[in-house]
Image (cartoon, rainbow, N blue to C red; front, side, top):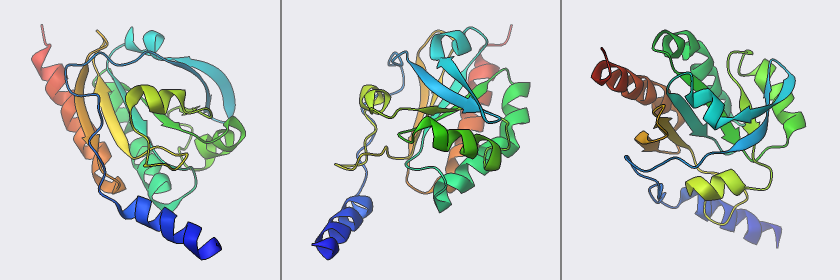
Length: 178
């Protein structure tokens, strides 16, 4: 039975990802979620973050896994570049808040918040589940201050999300000068 379950999980992870249902130009679902930054918990509100500028909302499957740790570390290293363009970053996973307290300091280097979507409501609203598993796929959204999605990138490989979202934020900023 255990082999069957592991085989099923491997098949689901290896299956091609469907593109996120939310596309460029769609209105991003607003959300409020428990979050952690620098090991401190707070209530994250997307609407409040958008008042300050564009927001990169990136979904990742599971804290402390190899790909998710790599991606979070890269977002942490790029935080100053996002800030220079007036953008902020929020990572979202189905991990519990206690796990994210640790992840926010140990992997995210206390540079950006990570939100807990324990019940999967945000994953569902953004349509980014990973098959039938109780985790999200790896999808990044760039959301303009007006709440419209300006960029979507979905790929399980963690190595392109930061560069792609930085370029998308720069493109948005360049088109909104003046």
